[in-house]
Amino acid sequence: MNVFVQSPKAKASLAYGCRYRAHPSSPLKRLTFTTLLLLLPQSQNRCYSYRSLSPSLFLSRATITLHRSLSPHSPNPNFLTGNSCFFPMERFWSGSGINKNKAMVENLQTYGVVRSKKVAEVMEKVDRALFVPDGNAPYYDSPMPIGYNATISAPHMHATCLQLLEENLQPGMHALDVGSGTGYLTACFALMVGPQGCVVGVEHIPELVSSSIQNIQKSAAAPLLKEGSLAVHVGDGRQGWPEHAPYDAIHVGAAAPEIPQALIDQLKPGGRMVIPVGSIFQDLKVVEKSLDGSVSVRTETSVRYVPLTSRDAQLRNA
Ligand code: SAH
Image (tube, rainbow, N blue to C red; front, side):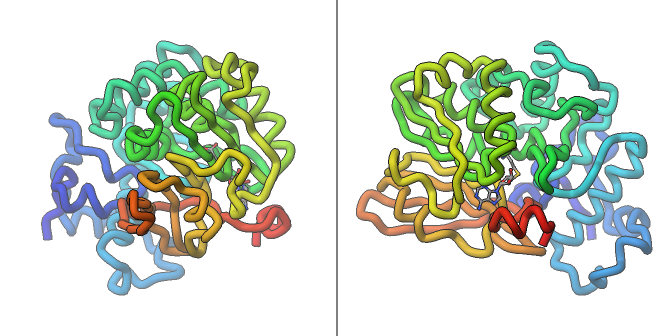
């Protein structure tokens, strides 16, 4: 079995950053089943037999292992919210700086994750280092812990969600960011919809809401927060935020066992929601409400996110 990382089929089904097209000079351009199998350590075989794994999960695990073998010193605290094995240079990118942020975005463009000019511009404007807690490499393509059993998603997951929602983040539109965490995507959404639009972040950990507001105040989205077109609230995101509904775009940053009805109800006809669904096995779902109100759901890719749950369960790490 040959695995072409660049094949459209693989692109559609792989997780943890495997959506990237391999760089033309990359040794990862063509991987064989045997290569992947050799890279799988015994210790990863605790919960699942590889024979029983779906092809996409098998490849996810294999590529995580490959990532580790390529960059053993890189930070990789856990496997939540997506990981990439295709950014071997990024382990050198610590510290902050808008040029490093720009280089991160250029890398995402090289790998085909960022495809549009608008998404590139917004990600260049919002310096990721302002949102990643000190002591972590902000431009590294991995989720990073932010406390309270939560993580900031990996840059490629943020980019993927921005790309998926771009058409529903036009100037003047309404967007909801459920599980807004650090506020990074909330800030990006606000820059996309501009001062005539409306962006609401809902996060159930009050401390994260406070720190996300401080993060946004240092970022390019600060004027929008001040003017009121961007707001972050403490709340249970499973209930959405009815006050500014219906929304053209809804992003959910945590994995729901099933798609909450309140969020479907708050989606505007013509609107789009991006939401990870599942527990151990999770898929990033794209939910669309057509103009006649009918709802369709498709799977974009396999992912790994923290759960969309109650505050107590999250703090207990249940
Ligand atoms: N997208 C954010 C955070 C991702 S982690 C970022 O990249 O910074 C998922 C976030 O969802 C966490 O901050 C967690 O506290 C929050 N969360 C989980 N369940 C929630 C719920 N029911 N309501 C609101 N927020 C929730």
